[in-house]
Length: 116
Length: 112
Image (cartoon, rainbow over all chains, first blue to last red; front, side, top):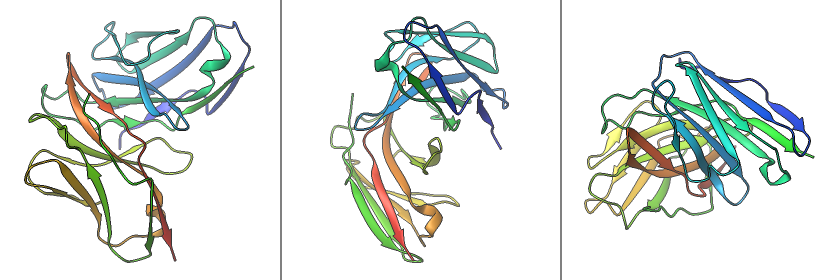
């Protein structure tokens, strides 16, 4: 089974801190994704990556950056954390297949981040 | 982006079939219909997907209307472990791959 592991289930940080959320997948997937999930807003795509060192902005990239130095690892970075970034963060990965193949995404269990 | 519409909540009895509806009237010809579910305190889990024909797998069946403007996820025998939020999603082609646009989902409760 595909395993997507997020480094922390719960994290508390302070306003202005630089925050790193780490995600590792063990299935050699090309594609990796970062979402945030908020009550009433559902899951929203922040960034995704379809290859090492490649990244694409999702729907809400402002205030975030990402890093993909190795295929199995995708990091989400909050350069200067703010209280409106308190949320559940979910990482996912998928096989690329071909462009139309609609490969399922496999999710981690999330990191609940609180910014005080 | 094309959107989906689902009821906010549904109830089912254990061991009975469940039909979860989804409307996607603005779907385009190349959009696949995906279903995911999210159990409490877990990330979303892939259930099934399809384009035009009905699909079956070990978890569920997906019935797609002939005009593709609606679909129904069918759980053949609901169990207590099926209580979750079910998301009907259109998969959008995007640059090198695609992206899922999550809606609000249907919260399914299963009564013993």
